[in-house]
Structures are given as C-alpha cells and as structure tokens.
Image 1 (cartoon, rainbow, N blue to C red):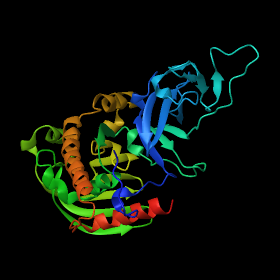
Image 2: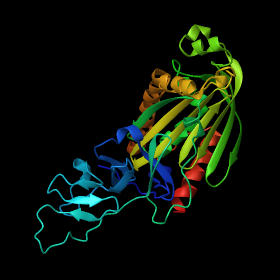
Image 3: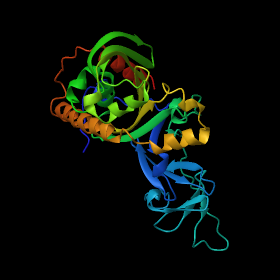
Image 4: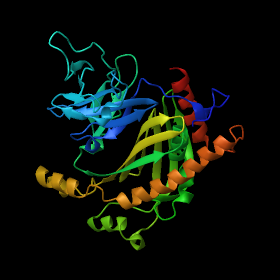
Length: 347
C-alpha cells in the first residue's frame, strides 16, 4: 500500500512532467508478444504489428477491464485473452468473435499514446497535447566508435532518490570494487529550468589511448590513476555523464509511481583513440561493435546492485520518518531538486 503524506511539495512525493518522452522498455523486450509496462501509474501495453511497428495502448480491455497485455498480437491487432475482442493500433475495437450478422463492433476505443522506437529503446509520451519535443539524443548508440553495455535499474523508491544518487559523485566511496574514478571534487554547477550540469575534477582509473590499454578494463593491476574531468548532467527527465573522452553513461528514466522507479543505464566505451581502426571497412567495424556489446556488464551490474540497495534504504527511512531532515553538503543535489520541483509543479 502506498503511504499518504501531508506535504504535497515534498520532493519525495513529486509527480512527473508528462510532456516529456520516457523510456518504458528496451526494443528487445517487445517481440511477438504484447508487453505491459507502467509509466507513472498508467498501465500501457506495447505490441508490434506485421511491419514491426510499435503500438502503445492503455492496458485495458473496455469489455471487462482486464489487461490486454495478457493477450496476443494477431496481424496488426491485439487480442484480449478473455473473450477474444481485438483492437487495432488506433485503439478501436476491430473484431468481436461472437457478433451477430446485424451487429457492428462497439465504439469503445481505448486510449493510445505517442510512441517512438529509437536507440534500442521504446519511448512513450503520456502528455495530453501532441509532443512538440524530441526524445533525448543518444548519438553514441549507432556510432561505430562506441561500445555499449546496458543494465536495468528497478528500485522500490521515488525517482528523486535515483537522480540524486546519479548526480552525487562523492558516493563513489560505495563502489570500491567497481569505481571508474576516485577523489571527485565538485568544481562548479550550471542550472536552467530543465537542466543541471555539475562539473567535477577526479582521478580516473582508466585511460583508453593505446591498443593494449583496453586490458585495463579487465585487469585491475594495470590501472593507473590520472586526473580527468567528470561531468554529470540532468536534462529532465533523464541523466548522462562523461568521464574524460573515453566513457559516457546515460540513465533513461521510467518513473512508475511515488515509490517505484525503473530505468535503463547505458555505458559507452570510446574507441576514438584508435585512428587506424577508423580506416577499416564499415562492416568489420560494425562486427567489432556488435561483438563487444555488453563487455562492461559485470561492472555495470555491480554498480546498479550497490546503488539500488542504498536508494531503497533511503526510501524506507523516509517512509518511517517523512519529516526527518537529512544533512546535504553537495550543492548539485539542491540544483536537481529545484529542477524536479519546477518541472513537476508547473505541469
């Protein structure tokens, strides 16, 4: 049961700005069968038509109110498991198996959502107006010089706890076995109504500059600390970070409720330093990119596991004592809290 709190402006009870694109699934998760997802208390079903196009509908059959995601895709329609009613991508009832000759399918259309499939993920827009913005750009996804690894974050906590965790580079103390940097020091912050950039100076364990330097990723004794710029950015509602010129991480948010958040973490390792590689045939470079996909999985999963444990403890502590104030010294946290409040309250 979701607890009820008194302070509606409390950061831990904020809603979301619905006029943004949110990532609800990876492309791989939506194959031939419908998939049910939740985006801020709204149940949505995703399914592919015969052309492979993604459709997003309210996950509800208007006949008996059961979930359409329990059913299956038939041609360009989704069929309810209960009575076999079918609905097209526009949300209209297209077929009822037991209609009489003089009957027509009822006009009981269900809600549809703008949906995009980009960068290996499914993006959904739940705002009432037609979207006039584009999803966050991730140019590294298709770029041949970047190797990707993807991890899923699923935490029983408000999305603000996750954002604060991502913006706070001092919490690297937690990740003794997985940390890519150390000794982070906040340099300065820039802030607008929808974005915060926090610039840290840090010591990095990795430097990808020669072919043998790739071995650092797998053999800790080969790593040597060196100074590197560490930048973290919250561009509502998503997040990304760069460590020098070699690494970039995105976190794509799907707030599910006031106490549950799902997100996708994408880690990119750059091969830009290897100029000879750029002269090889494109097909071979694509083969290398595909073959190395997921090479940082162990590290990414380790980071996620440790972070989720801390985030959920924060949520649990808040629920027990919602009026208890913490003591925050990182100015980046105050900045992202202001942005979250501006975005949620203004909408």
